[in-house]
Length: 166
Image 1: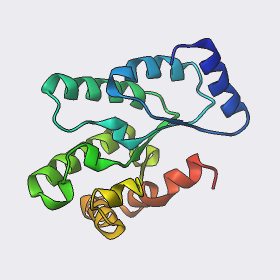
Image 2: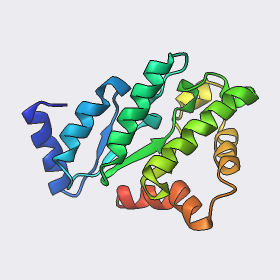
Image 3: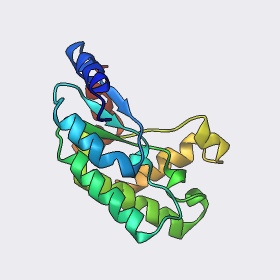
Image 4: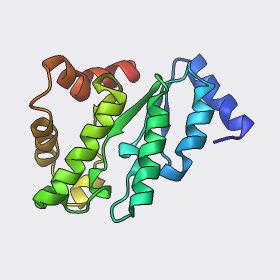
């Protein structure tokens, strides 16, 4: 993330109207934030809810949260709300696990705002985990029923369409 050639490549993406899909682990978030702070012309999409991993300790969760806040401070960084089974294996079959995932998703939306978050699947991996599309998107709908229509439109469509120039 700190390599000059890498940074040059990210700059080129933005110069050509393209975005960068970022897959990294929470221990890399601060380096990512430092790098991408210098490249505001390139939209960055952090994948998979920032790869929050099930079964870690409080220090890990705080590291994830601290890094997510650093990335949220960059207005050109968005987040895909996907691969949620990584946060809590079997969340779609367990109320307590689902509540944990719901809280994480809502926390990220609160950090970044609906206009910088997008619901997404991780197919076919979600299906291998036993999560069908109706279940996945049913959870997304249920978790956002108290939000306004413009906020929900951003989460389900508008953010992705804008970021990906669709």
